[in-house]
Amino acid sequence: MAEPLLRIDNLSKNFGSIVASQGVSLKVFPGEIHALIGPNGAGKTTLLNQIAGDLVPDSGQIFFDGHDITRLPLYQRSHLGLARSYQITSVFPQLSVEENLLLAIQAQRGHSFRFWRRGLSIPELRDELESALERVGLSERAEMSACNLSHGEKKQLEVGMALACNPRLLLLDEPMAGMGPGGTVALSKLIRRLKEKMTILLVEHDMETIFALADRITVLVYGEVVTTGTAGEIRSNSIVRHAYLGDEDESC
Image (cartoon, rainbow, N blue to C red; front, side, top):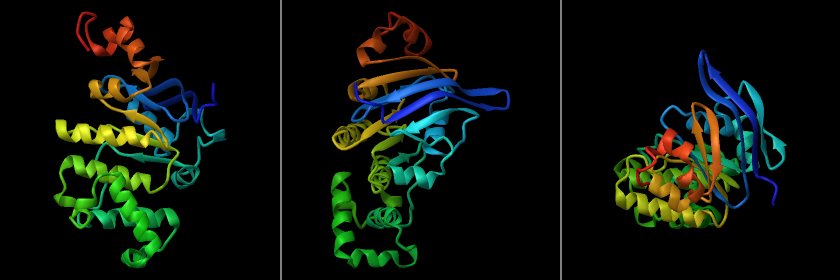
């Protein structure tokens, strides 16, 4: 088996008396969609925050492509090829779709933001921008203000901004939250396409989406890993069904 792209060893994080992560160990392999599931308060977002660098663990280690990134700052993790989207959409609402994406592209290239609008006149950046718009399905919304996008389109834009970093590992935190059926289908298709070029670690409450997308699933309960397996293995695991999916006779 290939070496894991992401390896987490015995990670723990407490907030006072609250245990958010307790001895978490996890492997994410290149080219897979790996999902994290669990009830509210299980520690899923806290774990993503530690992987991304928004939180420093109390103990344990995080390795990305063999590098110990446990205490690396966010920008260094980004340069190694790690990017994330957030639970709450973090686009710039008063800027257009293409301006949001251009900011992200220029940030990755280390360009000055003082002249960022001039990027639209630079052929190389323009080509990259058009490719990014097409990749996330927002070409027809390029000149629209982000504040006028639907919730699902804002999520697509945020994913597009994360992709500007050309990540090898993309962390997605509840991308389907608040979406209707149409938005969920569109974003699911986008995630499937992205799998061809990168590895994805996904937190999501929509179990139908998880079972349809994920190659492997890790279940967290009270900050601890209960089990990891394929969708079929998770569906049939009696401990998981009792702790998270519901009664054993309940359909998933």
